[in-house]
Length: 94
Image 1 (spheres, one colour):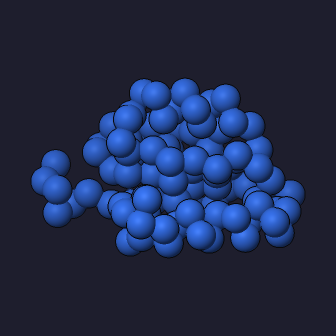
Image 2 (spheres, rainbow, N blue to C red; image 1 turned 135 degrees about the horizontal axis):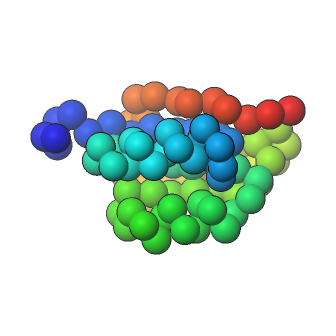
């Protein structure tokens, strides 16, 4: 994969099931992901498996305060690859 083809993707519901499978597949293809889910342990493990490609926020994105805290993360200089999110995979359950 060329660096021009690399995408930054935000995924909700990424700690298990199809969300985690999608995140792993995208990482395998060289993409960067910002993952959100209620359970932090799987997200921490994902970050360890793909250093430099994963950032995460643990919390219920249906909670307004959690969703609001995700916004500054996505626009901060700290996560430069997240500044240009090209895709959102929204899998949360309510």
